[in-house]
Length: 176
Image (tube, rainbow, N blue to C red; front, side):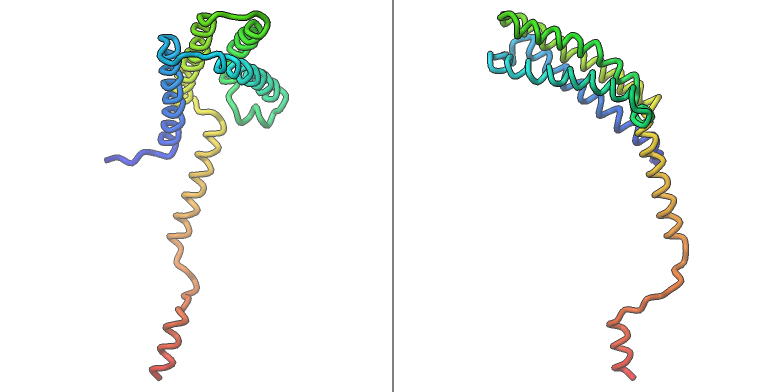
């Protein structure tokens, strides 16, 4: 069996992770849409607060990335831009939910839409980042290569000092 390179292995793990998250989001969205998972009043209230904070974070993260050259060098701009429409939708969805009492169907359709959008985004990112890895992954690959080369270098060099075991020295002294 052929040994897989570090680059391919790292890209494959990251992409598979994104696609697995997308599949989970897709399943949860379908279960909510089909009323297998009921959306109680408590869930609706908690969902509004959590998603409002999450949407604010998506926007703040994008602004932070645009303002920081260091952060921009490590992340994918495409990933951040892809979530901005979702952040706008969530803010409007939550504000409408806070202002006017909404029916169960409002949440039964709106909540799965959020999960479906995220699932589509993660599936796209999983495929895209297999071919175009994010800079942070490339840095991790380079660090792993450097560590592997250093380890091989140390293993191939003969040790200059042969350290004796103190037990062996004592046994030799007894034998004399």
